[in-house]
Length: 595
Image 1 (cartoon, rainbow, N blue to C red):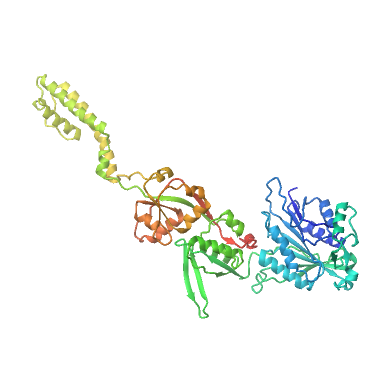
Image 2: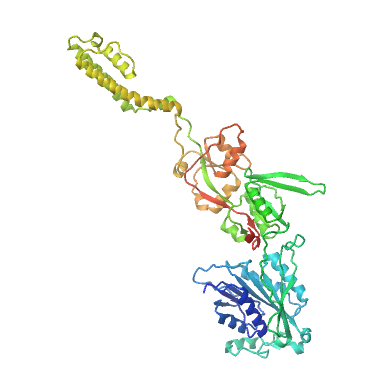
């Protein structure tokens, strides 16, 4: 069975048969079988043994029983499946007991679990003497659940007692001893449970929960965003009623209808964009005749956000936050989001486990690689590159061939009859052979067969050398190439460059990846520009910095004149990390499903 049932459980006895039947019907009809169901009891709760027995007999949810307030018992295996359903019992002993406070204590403990799921289905069962009207109490409970936890999928169950039981203050009639004289003690309770009840024999309950006193169980719910007038305002209503005498629901209405619409009727949504020039900036800032300041933003994220929220028929209300320190401003905005002051926060805020545990987030909008920007290689001097066409040994070989050939031809001429006099001295032979090497005419053609053989050999040799030389020479004239640049992190750390940093990204790397950050051995210096070091990087070649690809490209495109060449920057091949950027929403926000 995939489900797991956590019970925050004190000593208990039996529960009203009608209430048990009602809860079972709701759980059986609306709670997902095989998915985690959590049952929470207040410290004063009692009388649930028969309900647990019925739920257990259905075999839809296995049980892990735990006393409320005690240390959590964790599983030996890794089970982080989100809870799909909650049954929360809130029981009062006296009329002046605060239902909201009792419920809040229970949910605060549940919220500490990694399995906490505010978008699950909640059934709040309230019992005991009440100082408020049922509908008024249900309204307060729903408002608290929405304001603090953003819980929408909730049904609040409150017993409706007969006229004889409305007077909760009649202690002589309603007072019940906990030591076993109340209603009926479960026959299966062992001696230890009986002893616990006897120890508490001075505690009295001042409400009657017998089936004969309950005529119905009222079920309250609310649905947000039904109209532009209501929007997210909590307006509780009686969705159905369990009739005790009939053992059935009055109208058989769906208790958990789909509550988050696809269109939100123009309801306002408060968005706090964090400016991140040049990816997006505040484009409009004006004050209308009523003194209200209006803002608008342009850029990739705002355009996508506007498209989504416009499609969902939201009215966007911007909560402008002045940018001081990029990192700290974003951190503070996320805390403000958690407190419910706004609905959406966006603006180059990375997806991070710590941030994700505080707030909910949408799907990733885009990702950006974080890289080292290093100086690009400079163009090589052309004459220097020409000298490097052939190695020194090859140049020596060419010269040696010319000299040796000149000596051979001089000797052939010296011992031959009828040879041209132009080859009778070594200097003249060298001049002619140099002319052959350069591909120009000689002073005289050789006449003898042996002389012509040597001459022809040198012609073909010079042709091959010239062909190679001219090919490389032409390439160098067109593109002499660039000097070697830094390509690896080891080369970077062994260089004499200065690491220049600025605010946000450097702080993010140091906090998110401390081991990597501590390995940086380069001397550090804060750059002068307000928000980025890209300006210094583009002007100087003695520094390096960390930046993201998209930010650097956008910044250079905006910073350079429109008629300039496309911006070019050089990077270390190793990527530090890839930052994923979502939009953040209030923890538990039902809008996550809509996104």
